[in-house]
Each structure stands twice: as C-alpha cells, then as structure tokens.
Image (tube, rainbow, N blue to C red; front, side):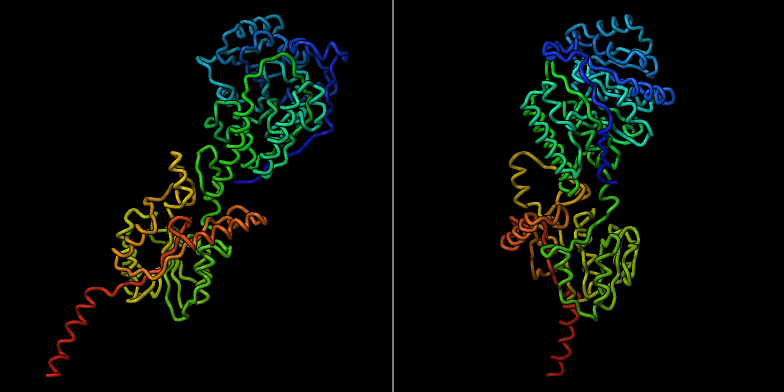
Length: 543
C-alpha cells in the first residue's frame, strides 16, 4: 500500500565527542580519527545483540589505508556479539582484502567474513550483495558501515539501541539533525548546502520529513529488505535514495538519530552533480509512476491495483463532462468497463436503467444492474441486441484484443440511432511527440501508455475505427491531463489544469491528453433494405 513512512527523530540519543579536541585532531587522518564510546549505550546494545541476530556490513573500495581502523573502532565489548561482520571489497586495485583479514586476525574477530566481488559492481551493486547475504543468513538486522571511516563505528551502540523495540524498519544516522555539527566535522560547505537542498526536494516530492536522505550510515530490518525489490535499484550511489523511496512508499517506519560527522583525507568517488541529478530523477519517476505516466518495476507499489479506476471530478475532466450531459430519464444505458461501478451509480440515478459491466461484478454500482462479462467475448449476446439507447465505453476499447470486433458488438446492443460515448488516450499528445523526438517511449500503470493497452489511437485513427464499425461521429472533445485529480489541488496545479483543458479543447489533436467521441449508430443496411422494399407496395397502390 502506498503511504508515507513514519519518521521519528530520536534527538535524545547522545552525540559522540572526539577523544582529542585540539586543532591537530581536527586535521587528523581519517584512519586515526576517534570518538568517545557511550558506556550506557554499549550496555543497552548488549541486551539487544544477545537476543537479535544483527550483522555489520562494511562496503569497501580502495580502503586499504582505512579498513584496519574501521574494524578496530567497533566497540570491543560488542564485537563478539554481532552475528557477523561482513566486509565486501568491490574489486579494489589495492590490498583492501589483505588489510581487512590482517585486522581480523589481530583483533581476534572470529565472525569476520571478508569477500571480494568478481568485478567492480559500484556502490549500489555492492550493497545488493550484502543485503542478499543478510537475507540468506537469516539476520534480523543489518547495519551498513563504510570502509573509508567517514562514519564513526563508535556510534554503533546508539544505532543498535534505536532498533530496540523492533518497530523500526530502518534507522538513519543523520548528520543533519544537528546541522552545524556537520560543518564542525569538516563537511565541505558545498556538500552541506547540497545535502539540504536535495533533501528538501526529495521530501517535497515524497511528502516525507527526513532530516537527510544521504547518510550512508544506516541499519535495516531484514524483513523490510525482503519486502522491497532493492535488487532492481541502481548500482550507482543513488541506490540509497531508491531504497529509502521504496521503504517510504510501502509505509515502513524510518527512525532518524543524530550522528557525528568527520571528513578526513578519504577519497570521494561520488560525482556530486550526477548524484544530485540521479536522486532528483528517482523521486520524479516515483511521482510520475503514481500518476500512471511512467513505469519501472522497482517503483511499482500496487497503487492502482488497490485504488482501481478513479472517477475524476475536476471541471475539466472527462467524467465531469459525461455527468453534465442531459441524460433522458427514459433511457437504458450500458456502461462497458465500469470497474467498480461508481460512474454507473451516478448515471443510474438519472435514467431508467443502467447495466454496469466489467470482468468482475462491479461492487459500487448502486441501483445499476451489475454484470460480470469478458468484453473480449460475445458480450452482445449476453446483453441483448438493440436494447440500449446509449453505451459508455470510456477508456476501455484500447484494452481489448480486437477493438474492431468490440465496436461491432457495441453497435449490435444499441437501438437504431443510439449514442456511443467512447474515449481513449491520445497517442499524438504533444508530450509524447516530444518524448519520441528524444527517443523515449515510457509505459505506465495508467494513462496513454498504459501497460495493458493492446492498441494506441490518435483522434483520426479512433474516428476511423468507429466509422468502420457503423457509427457516424457527431462530436469530438479533448481533455487535458487529469492534473487536479491525480496530482493535487494547489493554486499552481489548478491553473495548470485549466490551461491544459483549454488547449485540449482548442486543438485536441495536439493538446488533448485524452478525447471523447460521441457517435450515433448508423442505420443498419438490413433496415434500409427493408424500408426500401416496403416502398414497393406503396408504389403499387399509387398505380
């Protein structure tokens, strides 16, 4: 279920202080950086580690100079209590693996496992291997630590304590709860500003409230990792952001605690501009996916499967237009592809009879007759020929295997002169034209490029489909993208929705996101023939 994650900032957790507070210590090599260990937190962490399987996962790349210090700085009282300390070296060209094994022997780390990837996987690709290992090792939790020493291993007790009652699905050791501490820890000003700006964008796009998205010091409940498709995420540095998105959008509880920052002489392998672009692109993709305009399996949270087809109420929407039509109270109407039947129920209160039809029996059709029928079958035989004064086929014909046959069957159930209201997405919408110009063609869970569409139409090709099926087109009306119904109701969005709707009416072939065609059933050839033959008797009487 799509939902915003509950974020808890545990400000009461004490921050660590550097053991040596003079200026020389601030200029120290990261390999010699030290922070005080909180004795109370260590004792509390012991209790948790004795009853939970918690693993430490250290991602390492070119970390030969730092890995010994990182392992040595894990509080000695806790080392033997972790289920495992896993180091995965991402095919470094230095001696990271040898240095880690040597440190393990020196420190008597019996549960240390040092692995090396067969080829460089990237930061995200390395994490995927570690989390698969945590799942297959049946850990309860896994703590992510960096092999370059940028994050303080002395802070592990506080992270373990934050896992305490088992309610947290993820714990983030945030450097931005106490923002000035990050600058005191020598975080470059451009990174400090960039972190906050990027986090503000991500929070705005996702409706979350994290103090930062970009700390690499985290702990995850392994059950939470099992529940999301992290293996589909990027192998690059924005893997962390994509994983947070997945947790937030699946309603997982994320806890933040303040953490110390130390930037020494470690080498950053992150291209800042590329990273910011990729993070922004990831949250944009999620929002587009939630509007049904884009699809990637890693951001498929089942939103539309749960909500179903939405009846849109904005003034510029298709459904508002349909409901505003003058419905004759004597009419019999068939709503094909009615989904749950909400629109059928509305129309049912205005006409003599409505039949709501879908693959599964509509459950919200009100007084309408709810029928379960496969529209790829002979539905005209089941519904009856020449029975209806009007048929609604809103955003349904494009889903059918044989649209031409479906249109013929719709004609069969209509009375002579009956009206068909048929809508579909406009594949010639200007946004899609621009996308094609850029080489993009992105399917989504809803919208014009719905994954379940079997046919795509322009206004011209849809008119031709109906004309060939025995209908005379009476009216064509374009509608803009359903911005107010699917995105939001802010002043800017309302103005954008109105502008989009106005352009769609003015030039529907180019600016309509979707369009409605009102068509009248042509008189059938047999009827014309019978009328013609009947005229013979009249002519004979006249002689």
